[in-house]
Image (cartoon, one colour):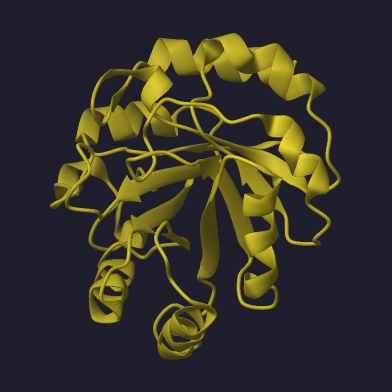
Length: 222
């Protein structure tokens, strides 16, 4: 199975268009006001809003909206406006919250939308939290537990994921940078679906170094 590559924290139109030319599977838009990568709005010139189907440069990458303990109506509004493919929940959202969100969106508003639940990881006990989301989500994202909500540039010990015995595929996140290409190629787990990268490929918040990303993607897909 092809390793899925998600690049999070996108915002600038030209940067979005440049990223879309790479072999990237998911593009993350952060709708969390406290993040330095917060998306207030993205101009139509980026080619992804308000309706991707109306633009010739439709993104190849699936669009992921990242939310943190957000009001459901706000999540629904952004999901509709940006025609999100995935909703990534990065806070303390409960299975009930997720089920209510899905009932509102599916099938009338976004019938194919999928849910990613991020879990903050420092030790093996943190991994066990996945169990409460079984049957409620489509994808897990294991990130580094830190004082901020993601984007810390810090990495956790991936070996603790050997305790994960679920059947929900997961993305590996948290401080992944160009120097980690070989470690990613060596990392093995039956549910390992891909990686999520962000701050280690930036030259400014929400602006990715496209050349650095291109070289990294080439090195892990060889």
